[in-house]
Length: 493
Image (cartoon, rainbow, N blue to C red):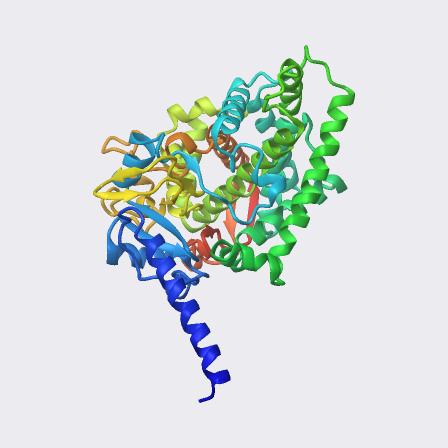
């Protein structure tokens, strides 16, 4: 072999040797939990099924235990499994494990602003404001619950027009839950045929589709590379820009008619805070944070809530005896002459248990949004360096045989005691836990209860095929679960 033939070989060998040295140096920082052996640059890409991250994590959990490490490229990711481990990290050590890990799919227009992706003082102020505003129920002259009740009645009117014919309820529920957010954020609902409303829903739907795609999972491994390579991942910034422009236009409309003494909705409340702090150059209440926080509310409160109700309806088609049980409670507690109220749930233990079981069985977000270790963590015999990304594997709780008698089967009895009273289960964390628990939890719970009970107050559900033939198992979609598509008929009671 001549000198020219030897030089490339030596060059490749040297580069490989240097990469391994750098890899070993980085991989041995701290005393990370065990996990599959990573490859330089690739990390554990080849050992994980990108199309089914949930299944891959379940296998690794069985092999390495409740805490393990995987590498996305050169970055270590520590995965936490089981109620005890996740509670100890997110609740008992909330400050240490309470940072937000980087969400690679978001560009700078959203990753630096709003509640979900941010850290530090920005996150604290925006989260506190959002929680207080959503809990206040005093925006304008109507409470949030009244807005939900109103939208539930519009949904009933739309479903009455189906006249007992089979239909896919997905779009109708999407309209209803999205309109609740619109009413809270913009101060008004949209007619379902409104072109602006259709544009908003279509943009959100397309954004969700990209976020759940395999391409975005690969982006998490190789963010720099995927910014260069062609693929659907480049659509997300375009969709986000459309969403930001839509919300910015609404903010401008609010500014033109803003009365600080009479806030009509979430945007007005934020504008009032901006006015209050306009002399503070370090204020977090700026236009960019307003727009990004509204985006957060839409992403947290549309598909998640709609999919939960969708799952509940298909379970009722499969189990008509459960529909009868809920309707018996509706007759006894609410009757036919008033709208269901969230307070009614305290006298409706079976309905409350059924809703909890929907969330547990659907397991909508098996992987929590990434957390970040804010300081070096000494946790269960391991040393996790500051800045390490943490993923709480919530599915390991929701499908645990330790806490649920039949974890793979739908069973409202998981949340009922021997006397039929509602039973709280500690290992039930559909909204996460600790400092990063979903700020829209209260809103989502209210929506699910009010809309579901309103539908069952007004209709009997009928399947388009035999009950025994209905498959209620959710579908795995990369790093999440979604209900199966189905058809149903509604018959007025």
